[in-house]
Image 1 (cartoon, rainbow, N blue to C red):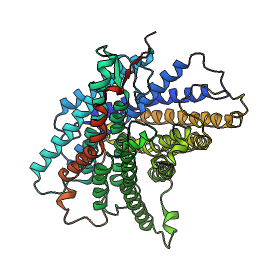
Image 2 (image 1 turned 60 degrees about the vertical axis):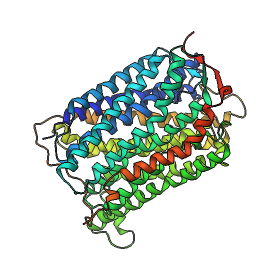
Image 3 (image 1 turned 45 degrees about the vertical axis):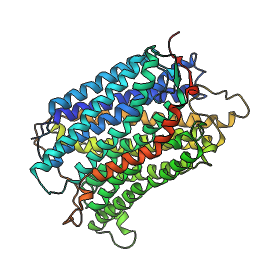
Image 4 (image 1 turned 90 degrees about the vertical axis):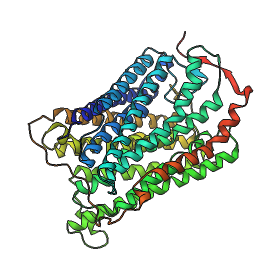
Length: 539
């Protein structure tokens, strides 16, 4: 019996309704910046919208999806009821309350600071309290994932942890440590200033604390998508997983390499020394290893599916793949967007090349390709795949799902590729408007119009996505037992290091302390680094 069904549905519905609202905000931002619209009367409205859009997309959507998916995986993979159901509901309502509080504060113009906070700008304390509630709610999920795994181990001594649960707990532990940076920044530095307890803030130290979270959070966003790659995609397309072991190695390496890399976002910041910038750049390159392992393993798994369907020769298996299956379409789109976004990330992680695109539209294009492209499209597929289990409904209409995926894929490419182009030309990001009558800017005007049209396709796709989920009706149909992908060769023995987390968590914490300890300590001891706070929305 799926006792957490209503809990999972609640997480998904709040996540996707917030996502739909954020999509409309994003499209409005592109429209008012384009030649299709007159200059916005009050630029603060633009930054208010950017803050709301970013807060939902960076914190609310991925947190709720990870929590809901995690609760579902715990029951379905461990084949036992979720322990701590009441606590899980408590965590959910904390996230909802925090989301509502932060959204209301942004909506009334008291927190137009963007989701990255950007001290010395200081918003109303209610915005930060809202974000803290979201994080605390997610920490309850982290604890419950660990508690449920521990109980399962006690009941199954020496057994191999299911790959789905191994990836799930990896994501939980990664988020627990990732969120420490931003939580410290808010609780120790920002909230005291927002409450009026101090009128100065060490902005350089705050930026280092946020960099602790800023890049590692991307891999927290990625974890549900990567879990789906390994444990859902091969089964859904009629194949088998190439290697269970490779999946465990990839998940473990994400724990190790995701954290000590965030200072590559501070290449232009003078308060961090060049030596640590170089170390973080090198470590950033290492995080490509688990992604490349995943690409190899999933492509091999897809080839197995093609050959099981009769594909022959070097590439005959590609033609034999079930291209009418939405899951096949989604994973192909995800890998294309992941490849394009990852290639752009090579420029961002380079100490020298980053100077050419720093704070330009290139950066916006890069992270939208990764998150809105490769990650969100797999969030769609997670929901589609679980919906018959959650709603006791018939399988969702494949034709409508394929249409929704095509709209999203085309929309993302039309949205982001022009951003990359104008980023190379130097167009700054996060500008409320541009003067397209200027001879130097006029040739770039078409790119903003194109991105607006791409955004319109995303709006249509998002509406269709919610429509497909909403029209599913409970027909009192008992769903078939949920299954995960099976490996071609089920491992007879799993090394203890790939069935536990102690080694990888210890390495994660140690590398983070080594790569962040000295910059944080050095900046904390510089009294002259404090600057006056700038209250936002207090006019």
